[in-house]
Image 1 (cartoon, helix red, strand yellow):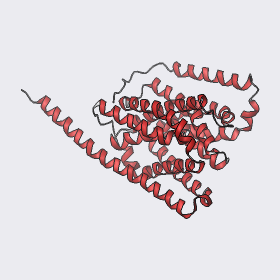
Image 2 (tube, rainbow, N blue to C red):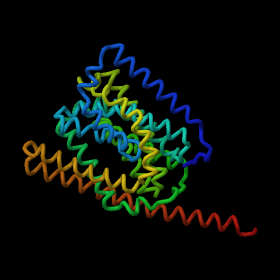
Image 3 (tube, helix red, strand yellow):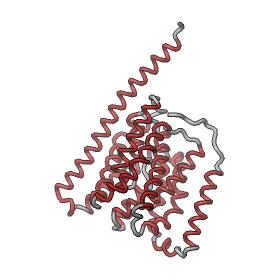
Image 4 (cartoon, rainbow, N blue to C red):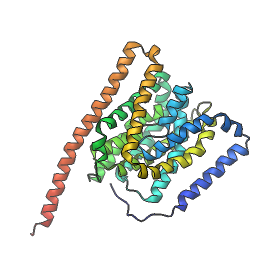
Amino acid sequence: MSLLPPRRRPIWIWLLWLVLFYTVWSWLVFAHDRWSDVVEHWAISLAMAMGSYAAGSTPMGGGTVGFPILVLLFKESAELGRDFSFAIQAIGMTSAAILIFVRRQPLAWAMMKGAAIGILIAVPVGVVWIAPLIPSLWIKLAFAVVWAGFGLLHLWRIGEIAGHEGMTEFDEHWDRNVGLAVGLISGLTIVSVTGVGVDMALYTVLVLLCRADLKIAIPSSVIIMAFGSVVGIVVKVLTSGVQPGVYENWLAAAPIVALGAPLGVFAVELIGRKPTLLFVAVLCVGQFIWTCWNERVALGPIGLAASLASVGFMLFGFEKLRIWGGRIVGEQRRRNEERSRSASTPS
């Protein structure tokens, strides 16, 4: 990991991005007579006001709110929810990422670089060859299970996770390889299927394996999900195209998230990361219950039991990662202390 110095770049870079985006959005809407689409889809704009805050202040993409709203509340297809997640995060989380860069927040650079390479390889493969094979019900369940496990992790371990300071320094090559594995695995499985997830995966590795401070882990996760979303939506547009209805929902929600996600970066400093994470953890568990209830007929008793077991498996994996992290962090700290003593001992 490398930490940038406290000097900050001019905020005008981010403001210029906003001007460019709103200029393009206005042209798309008014020059092409699409204002009626914006008005018709006002509800998704309202939902993404909250989703964009989560996108900028937590390791959860805006699609984590947009997906269940579209799929569970509006009864749209899971495929549309996935494509919308890519499209809306490509704006909201990119906007938040630009602000994070401008503010020169500390980031886990080596791990992010590895994850970006993994995403660049895995997401196109997953979007083109894996996602089309996954039934709609499985997409809903994959989303519900992954984020329920993530939510329960925070309800259980929030005190420990919020108490980390700094980040354990490992070998940069090791960090990059771990990031690469995160990008490849999450890109092929979670991201290409649901439209979200690499942010959660990278964040989990940082806080459980590397004991990273939330001030490092969350901004790093926001940036990598922004990158993954841009890759995902570009691949979708260039190959099979996005689902019908994605563009109309995007037109309505994009101007909200372009400003809302960056505001989440600022607001979390006032509200605090711990209360915000607890709030979104409850939402994660709630959407799992909602999904299981909505799909209870299709799932049946065996499917419901398998879904609960999958959440338990997620928690088991998180706990194993936490234990492994404690072990290797302890070993690394002992090595660092030995090096310090050796360096301070007169020859």
